[in-house]
Image (cartoon, rainbow, N blue to C red):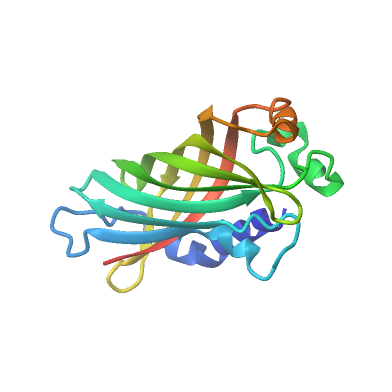
Length: 214
């Protein structure tokens, strides 16, 4: 709930820029063909330390504009899960966090480097596909390693690119996305029993990316 509040607050704060910028900043003669961005949701973990629900989420995107419509990029991400990712909103996701009823007997750390493709559809509207191979490390509550594994994580995004500032170098990208993981290997039994109760995908995750072009 705190993370959703942070996203909403950031959107409200920056909405003044969105009102005056309805056009995409992408153009064939742009001086700034590279960009770096990160999801604002990671700010919600700052100051939580070793809190049980701290996902320790770090994520960074470096992208290059091939032309006014096509953008390719590299994605680095690492996070720590305390319960299965496949619990949907309508399954009572927030309630289960409060009750701790689906918490793992430890943590799952996932880290990977992947690629992304972003396609501008109309003005600032875009669609993105990201593919992220991940190395998994299972930990107990004392952060001692239990096992390692592999996961292929993919996500699909629909959002809007909003640029602001004197040279339109700063931008935000409010979006919604869903993700799935088709290959997921070497999961310890205690973790797998919880994972098997839920889906191998997650739908309708709201997010806000913040970035700069250079």
